[in-house]
Length: 323
Image (cartoon, rainbow, N blue to C red; front, top):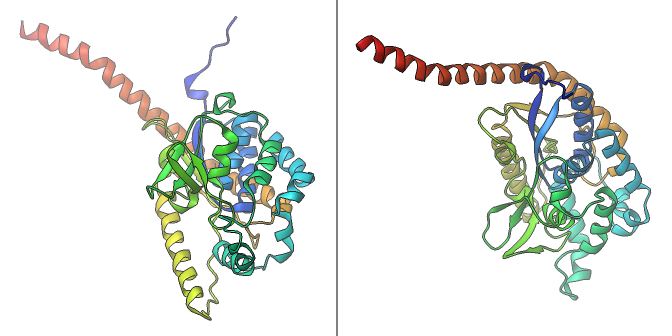
C-alpha cells in the first residue's frame, strides 16, 4: 500500500550555495540541520566551492556523508599533491580572498611566466581531489537537480552547467583565475563562477512558489586598509566590487543565511569542524523564518488553486442567471 503524503506536511526549499573557499564548509552544517528537520532540498545551484559542496550533497542526499567525504579528502594523498595543502601555512589571519590570491600570485608568477602557464596549480591534481568527493561522473547520476555556475572568459557572461561531466563542471566552477588554468567547455573557456555569479539565487528556483534559501560565506573586508602601492588599490577596488555583487545576488533570496566564518581563510580546509558547527548554528537561527516562509508560500498556492478551480463554476453560474 502506498502511503499518502500530506501536501501541507511537506517542507521543501531551493538552495543557492555561494562562493567562499574553505568557508563553504559551513554550508555542510546548514544542510545537516535541514536534514534533521525534514526540510527537503528540491534543487541546488552552487558557485565555486559552494558548487562542490552542493554537488556532493546532490549525489549523497546526506549531509553527514558529505562531511565524511571532505574528511576523507583532507587525509588523502591527492589533497597533498594538489598544492592546496601547501598554502595552509602561508595563510594570514584577517587577509581576505583577493588579497591572499594577489599575494600568492605575486610570489609565484615570475617562476611561471617563462613556462607560459595559465595557472600556478594544475587542474589534473584538483580533479583527483574532486573524484574523492564525487563518486559518479555525470549530472544524470545526481539525486537532486543541481547546477554549477562558471564564468566564460570569451563572452564575459556566467554559464550555468546542468549536464555532462560533473568533475569537469566543478573544476570550471572553482577554477580561481590565476591559480587554476581556464577549463574548455564546448565553445566556452571557463573560470570561477564567482567572477559573475557569486551567489546563484536566480538559478536555483524552479517556479514562483518555491522558497529560496541562500547560504553565503563572504570574507570580511579589512577595515584597517592602508594601500602601499597601485596594485593594492586595484585589488581593493575589486574587493569592493565583489562585495556589492555579493549583496545584490544574495538579496534575491527569500531567506539569507550568513554563518559566522570567523577568520577562516579561503584555503583553510583543515578548519572543517569549526565551519560545520558555525553552519549548524546559523541554520538553527534561521529555522523559524524558513518554516514560516514555507507555510506562507503553501497557503498562497492553495488560495491560487481555489480561485482557479472556482472561476469556471462562477462563470457557469452567472451564465445561468442571465438565462
